[in-house]
Amino acid sequence: IKGTEGMVVSFAKCCRPVPGDAIVGFMSSGKGIVVHRQNCRNMTETASQNRKLSVQWSDHVEGEYLAFIRVQLANQRGVLATLSATIADMYSNIEHVNLTEKDGRISTMEFIITVNDRIHLARIMKRLRSLPVVNRIWRK
Image (cartoon, rainbow, N blue to C red; front, side, top):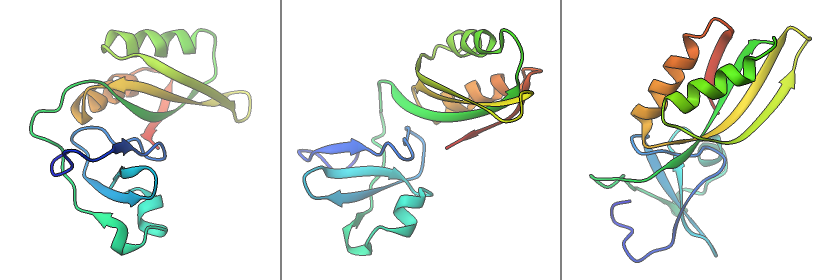
């Protein structure tokens, strides 16, 4: 993150920013600078303006970042295996998964996955969206 050299920087778990996202920093006592996506509800609703910082991604960001996605889909046999294989084929790893069932036919799966940047995440979401079982996909 540009301009934060020598400072403690962490990434907010509420919105999980990844390189390429528009971001904002929040000065937090005991945590240093916590980086949020600009459209994060926690930043727009509760953040005091004098603790917000203008921050940007560095020009050359490397590594893996965690992204949170939700997938609404048809509840059928093998659907988790299908989604898992698709995510793995896109060079991502699933760090966490949670399943909630709506009415027996529709389920929502929540994934925390590893991505390199926003473009990588968009490609994964596009591939998942193309699966016949997927009704809707979005970032939290």
